[in-house]
Image (cartoon, rainbow over all chains, first blue to last red; front, side, top):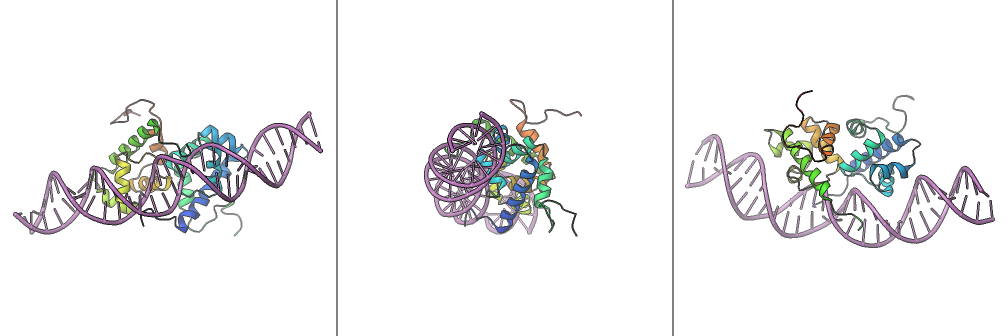
Length: 94
Length: 94
DNA sequence: ATCTATACCGGTATTACTATCGGTGCATGG
DNA sequence: CCATGCACCGATAGTAATACCGGTATAGAT
């Protein structure tokens, strides 16, 4: 009643966020990216796997900076997909 | 020892974040901005007053979107000034 | 003077995030 | 075969964020 549980929508958005970060990490070791960004490897792993739906702003900002991502683009990608695929290839199949 | 307490640096950054958001809100009522962004007025008030140092990424993104702010610029403004003045106008020209 | 709207504050309740620890699987190189 | 490095997972610990509920103050309008 006070701190409302995560909605399915928030959970889904968290998974999209994780997918975006993981793809941006590419081949770089998770350990290095995490330590270099100043976050715990476990935390980054949880975020990438979608087990943390609403991470803190500084945490995401540090990771995005480390990966060379724009926060605005990240937000647009995870909050915007009307019904699109944020998985791998947005416009390929059809 | 697990969820480390907020460092003075994080607290200071939180205060800078609050100042940035408050200035961007301008004359608009806090209540309207908060509800329109989908966050509780209490939460926005705490963030603006610096009492919440590390808000969630979705929360800040929603507020920034409502205020027309760029997340990248917000992050640059609050994470950059090592000991600088984020008070009124550090760099005006360019 | 009363009413309304806005903002600020302290306290409270509940969930969520962050981090450490121990164990497992898989690949690579000795 | 065994050691090393990286990743994944479950459980645990502890602080922090989110939200609601009063009460208070100020300014504007009726």
